[in-house]
Image (cartoon, rainbow, N blue to C red):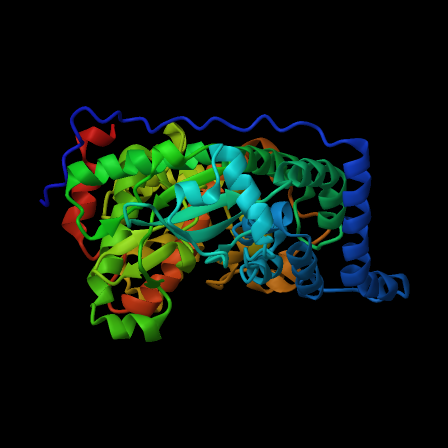
Length: 475
């Protein structure tokens, strides 16, 4: 059996606990302005559908999905972040809507350099040129919550400087308040959507955004994972080192990693580096931290995974981190043990899935209670044993739509999102943001696996995974 990297002596098993930013309620004036902006976007994107609906036309979920995704993109920040959760929640919003939202890009508008300079100088109490020998006024990254610029320290070290967008706190506060009224009403008009799941989803989104609005949380988790890398000997993985003396709530200064996004095949080819073992290592590293410690990078899209010119793979943007509680961690481990052939683990896995979404599966597929365990196993087992080129890891989301896609009794119910008027409801108390984040990452890994590891299965290094799920450090 393969020997796993030992748990680092002296490194706490628990990662640093994030300190959420205490978001204040929006002022009446700001809420009015944001309401006006939101309604203007809604009218522009959704009014044509509303007019046709008033004339008696009925719509499939796919007809609503595209204009809704465009509206979220127009509104930016909070809506983009919610859209990313929509993309990983087919059981809540239906397959068509979730699939459309997977194309939603977290690409914000530029911020004028004068405002970026002001934010940095206010945070550091010094002029920009007293801190940096060079500072590129053109951003290298423009996400919904922050912008990133390249700079050079006086000692010649290149760094990345991440700056929260000016006024982001007010915008998020107003958006979250508006969403409490708006999003359930939108969801109630989408066939197959589970509108009762919206309030807990918005609660999870609020927690996530409040953590992201204090960049010191990101700095602490990056330092923690760098300590882990120093101890467990994973030399192919790189996480930027933080310059703690220059970092504050609104500004994060970190090591610059030079490379290309993992899906930029043309540029990567010029590096002369074989990406296959690097992608294999990043998949194994993800499962190492999630299965051993219950913690994982919560946004591994291609822009955050960089193939570096020095032959390593860099993992960027640690603003979103998933944390599995004890029950979810044990369920995740049970799935891996089951896929490795543990018959007792299959019972644990199927019982939990049936408890969570059994009524939905029975309704949509017309199967009996006796058929459910075998159906679930027939969907899950191949994901771990067949090559990436032949499977869809996204099935691990395990919404009823994914089970429907395998065919079987009642599979014709999949039309229009599988919705019928008597569709059983999901229990909102079972919503778990971190399990949705985990599912979201599996969507990304499916893509990378199909790009680089088409001939390999997820558990191709069987000894590694056997050692991992039986690791005493993980209990």
